[in-house]
Amino acid sequence: MNQRLMEDKVVIVTGAGGGIGRAYALAMARAGARVVINDIGVSLTGEGGSQSPAEETLALIREEGGDGAISTDSVSDWDSARRIVACAMDHFGRLDTVVNNAGVLRDVMFHKMSLEEWRLVVDVHLNGTFFVSRAAAEIFRQQGSGSYIHTVSTSGLIGNYGQSNYSAAKLGIAALSKSIALDMQRYGVRSNCIAPFAWSRMTSSIPARTDEEKARVEKLKQMTPDKNAPLAVYLASDASDVSGQIFAVRNNEIFVMAQNRPLKSVHRGEGWTPESVQSHAIPALKAAFYPLERSGDVFCWDPV
Image (cartoon, rainbow, N blue to C red; front, side):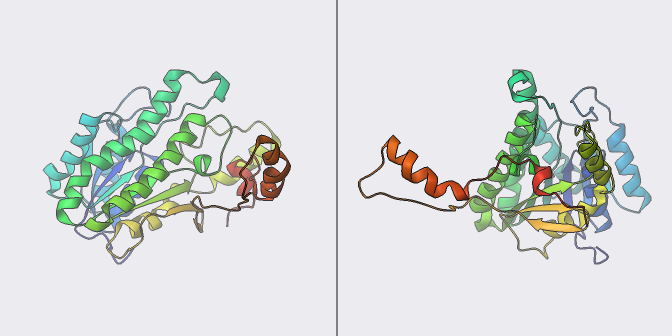
């Protein structure tokens, strides 16, 4: 990042008032970008509202000689999402990268989840990512360049308990990112996802009831939000030609995550009946089935 890969670029980072979003904003500024710090200052569950988290991030950027602007509009409303993009144009006259990072959590087991808990999380994560991305799309198309970086989660890519709203939204973002990459490739626009591992507000609610869960949480605390930032800066920069990918960052590890592809197939010339599915198809395919694993079951080794 000493090369200042983002010199003279303008970046929007949503949810930049703390945690991973603040780490992204600071890293972009250190790399030379002017940053729109979007944060509505609410609690992890979406309550309250304050400008102070965004102001703190801006102060940190300015202490290091960088420049930025504050947006306190919500990503979850179409008109306010457009104002976030307008903030970049009004203050800096251009926009080069959108980092969709804003989020809330309402963790609850599926059979107890309310409509409000579902809608709030989907509105902020999935709809918010669409709204801000779509608001920036025309600018990117006209200038023939641009980069999207979307925050996803292994809770969606792999699975987790009590997060059906969050997991569904995050997996939806991965599909949205791929669609953006395909649709806007002709305009020189790139779109990628990062599933970050970091101890922040968003992970502080991870259950820690058993000794095993408590030990895992202690390991997570060692993974600071800034470890995710170098990849984000690279993907945002003109040095990158990467698009349509899903990455995960865990401390000093960077992973490229699998995307859905056929694993195994069977066929019968005469077609299938429920009975032949039972006796032939399922036994033949079963070795390729995925177990009911959580993110922690797959990423089961200590962070490097």
